[in-house]
Image (cartoon, rainbow, N blue to C red; front, top):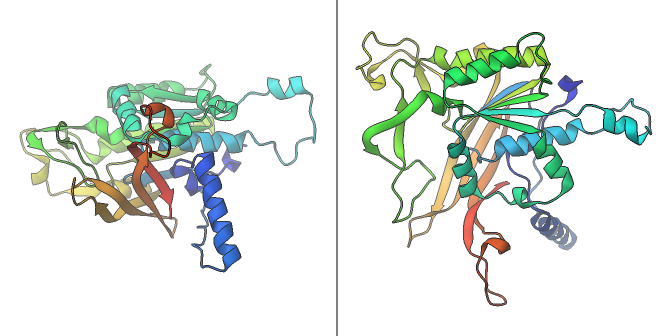
Length: 335
């Protein structure tokens, strides 16, 4: 039963590559053997069937969450026979995950900047799970709602998803602010790059505009018996409750607003929030070297870090023996 599959909070960050994970296990074992104090491993709770996380997370979180969910879904049922014919196992329908997000370029550029190490894996298990992760790129909220409505219709012949992920849907309701460019907290750009433009809500957008999408997604989850995970990297924004009679009135002048989290909770969604704690920058380049965050979810608080990583060995030019790899991408770790 799909409802019995509970995704742990740890799936919100990408898994470490095998070499790094093995090294950390050896270091922890050595510290324990020598009697040194070790950082206790956090005990991760499970996400409810309807969950939302508001705040900065890696761009790979839809993929890592989908992979973790399908890995759990592929485990045999506790009450199933100990052994089944190979043909019977292959004939069983495999669960899949539906990821809905904005334009393709936005997600691809974010993944390229992060350069998650786990996506470099060539294991059959990961490739198989990613093939069962159906990513749909929607150019507008109208397209997104239409797709959700069609998939949630009774009698549809498409196999229903086991989990639905809405990623950065809020960006479809926003547009760059003319004449104002800024760099978001924790981001940086080189001398040759233009700063990212500040984003503002489109004219006429209200809290109901966003919750209307969530309501259709909830109906799809109900019909399919699926889990729903909402991820909004923009955070817990305040959206206007009503729109002005004139679209020329800026959103900043509207006083009647409500937090995104308040609207989601009214729809029965459990909400977690990510907050920034501290940032370490390079004094010479003023680039962020490491940033710490906390995730509050279900009465628990977890901390994690984002630090500068290294490029894959195959992505670097030839180097001398002992020469370090070039820096690139981001490494996200629970702390």
